[in-house]
Length: 91
Image 1 (cartoon, one colour):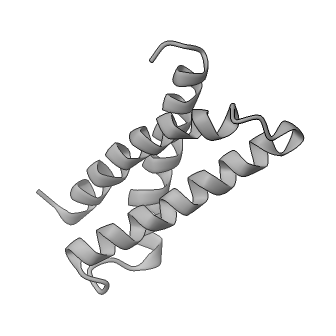
Image 2 (image 1 turned 90 degrees about the vertical axis):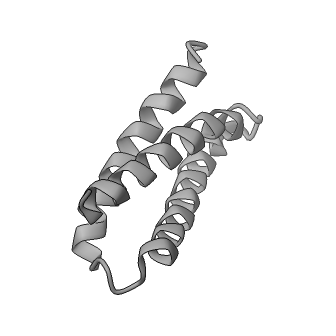
Image 3 (image 1 turned 180 degrees about the vertical axis):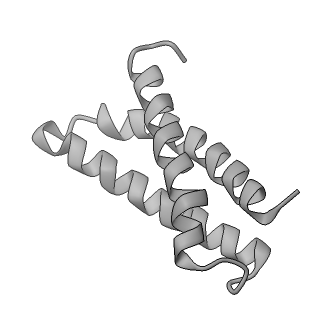
């Protein structure tokens, strides 16, 4: 399997997990700052996932452009889907 596919799978799995956990950050009761704190949580989770991926495959294995396409996009969209599904009570 290619490196891009492995990175995408790892980011998709972590996106699903952190998307589910973002619901708890959003409904914690921070009032007007709930949305901001949720996006900060997702951003920090994305950075953690990126560092884990860089640790697994090596820092020189991907450049930033490849990581943005293979890591950020699946993480963000799958995270948003799982966040909305958990917020609406589907999960």
